[in-house]
Image (tube, rainbow, N blue to C red):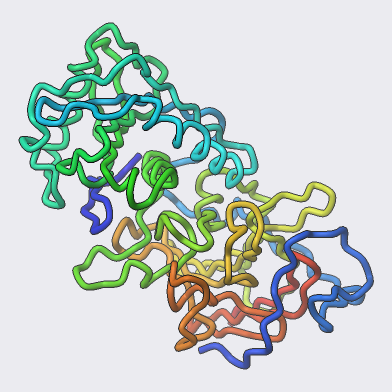
Length: 406
């Protein structure tokens, strides 16, 4: 459920590195493990490498998140509205068709098939709002009271004949070019529909769905309904990409690597406990980590290493590859970041540690400086938190990583 906060992109209510070797990209097509060297790197022969046994499964150090797992079917009712001062100027299908399958497909990919987003559209007509679009003061200063008025007006326009039973969240979509409704935002406050159904979260979409971010706006906003925070700073003048760059669409919808962090997949129950290795004791351990984007049942490696640094804070280690949702990623390799279950939206709950500060990043600036943060074979990173990460070898999309906990 969304928490209450204010955002520069969309508003919601609440609730050190060492030597760099030449870039050795993650291979796009994983192959079965072998004792031969991968063409990607001369240092990739892992025949003699035996990663240490998992110190403990993640259940022993699972964070105390404020929201629990989300798997199975997540149903979203889709309500189309227009206004006395801005009647609908397109057909409903022109608005619905671009979002009919892409957001659902992306969630299926990111969740390894564990979450199915089912859209339940009311396609017969636009429901006329009782007030002009200009009367809702739908701006960055939007208050909860005003937002709820907008939502309840939309539900009243739908009337008791529309059933919202068994709905997990509600999407309200305005006409294209209705500029007064400019941005998308969500709330986790319960609302009651005229048919008596209680809806626990509502997302009101704006023109950014059509003209800025596209269908992934649905995934970002629905992420809030699933309990995920915004990963960008809210403070005026701060770069949206300051903390996570172009990783995870909860930080940047147009991210070069939009797949969710292992931290979020762990929270949502998309990663099993045995897929996260927890390092609790001091010493050096070695781990094989597989790319977060895909599941290879023939040779599945853990997806992340978690090192608790406080009662709520962690150093997380995962592998990013140009696969799945991240097919367009420019920054691949071993990604290291901090995560804190006590921090919410706008507070930096996840922060990527830049292994190449001052590099300028990579790609088309969809994430900027942090886009090339992942480590390559031969590199190491001292987090400054008593955890050092060293990349020992790579075999296709698996990396052998040494973690030193001091």
